[in-house]
Each structure stands twice: as C-alpha cells, then as structure tokens.
Amino acid sequence: MSIKAKLAWFISITVTVVLLLNISIYYFNSKVELQSNAEQQMLVIAKQIGQSMDTAQQSRRLIESSLGEKLRLAAIAAQNQLDPDIANVSNEQLETLSKQLGVDDITLWVRTRDDIVAAKSSDPAELNISSKTWGYWYTAFNQLFDLKPVSIKEGQKLGHFWSGPINYATSNPSRVNKWGSYYDGTTNYMINPFINADVFLKFEQTSGSEAIAAQVLKDNSSILEVTGFNTDFVGKKADYQN
Image 1 (cartoon, rainbow, N blue to C red):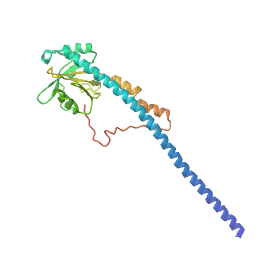
Image 2 (spheres, rainbow, N blue to C red):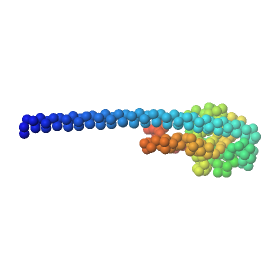
Image 3 (spheres, rainbow, N blue to C red):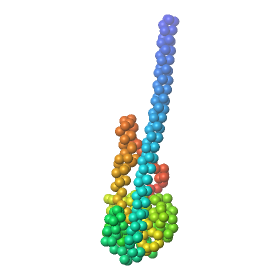
Image 4 (tube, one colour):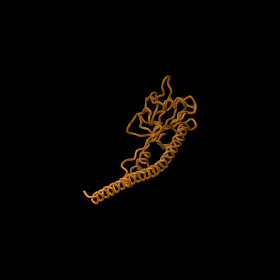
C-alpha cells in the first residue's frame, strides 16, 4: 500500500473516530440533559400535587372539625333533655331525640368494672357493644369518664368531648360514621351521637387526593402513576384499630 493510500486510510479512520466520539459525547450529554429536565419536571409536578393535596386536606379537616363541633352541641342538647340516670332513659326516647337534633343516632355508654359498653341506643345494632378492644378509642373513653383532657394524638378534643377519626361502624361495617363522645360528670353515662360520613367519601371522590391524582394522570400522559406515602406510618407496624 502506497504512502498516499495509507495516509488516506489513516485520515478516514481518524475522522470516523472523531465523529463517533462526537456522536457519543452528544448522546451522553443529551441523555443527561433530558434526564435532568425530566427530573426537574417531575419535581415541579410533585410540588404542585403536594400543594393541591395540602389544600384538599385542609378543607377536609375543616369539614371534619365542623362536624365534630356539631356533634358536641348535639350531645349537650341531648343531655339537657335526658334524665341524668340512664335507668330513666329509653331507646325510643333516644330515637326521637336523634331526629330532633339532626344526627343519625345517639348511643349512651356506661363504664363497668373492666369495660365501657353501649347500654342504650337509638340504633338497636349498637346495644351491648364493648369498647375494650378499641385501642386508643378505649383510652379516650376512659379519660373522658375520668374527667381528664383526652391526651391521645388522634381525633378532635374539646371541653369534655372527643371525636375520633371517621371510621367504619363496628355494628355495621358497610357504614362510615363520624362519632362524638361527651361526658361532663353530671350523668352516669357518656353521650355518643354520630352521623353518616358520606359527605367525606363524596369529597374524596370529587376533590380529595384520589381525584387530584386521577386529574394529574389525565393531564400528563407521560406520568404512569402517582403514589403518596404517609410518613407517620412508613416503616412502622400496621395498627388496625377502630
């Protein structure tokens, strides 16, 4: 092979190597830039989702707090119309009173030697239910009967009153209720009015976290899934309490 041919071959190889290097450098730079842009876009979207969910949760807490205050007022109104001795209160009287006060039902709880049980109620399914296995609910009930401020972190606390988180009814698991418990020591029972919490389910469907996540997926075809983690429970053992 002549020197001229060798030189041409060398130049061709050099140009090819340089082009390949340029292409590789451009590819990796573009990949890094695209990945960085994608990560930045995801961070922006995540912050927007977080802000939207914070607003939704604030609205939800406001609604739940308002319902808790309504339940406390209903309990006080019920106390003013009921005999302080549970022996002189009938289930039929509680049923009539529930309708008058705008709540679904009213249950009266009494404290026994080793339990707190539902002794009278406008809802027959509530009668004789025990709360001993209800975890922090049972703790809150005992603190109310002791005329102490409820100290657990869960639920809404007001004077002589505690309203637990919205939950499924033990007497009817198909129902989701909001309960309020009131005891000021002037009766020998605790007053527990409650209402159906369908309003919260509807709120969650239209304006809650699930609705927000669905809207994000609809508006951003590149996003495959939105998952939220509650840092209060990550890494902790599941706690299945009423």
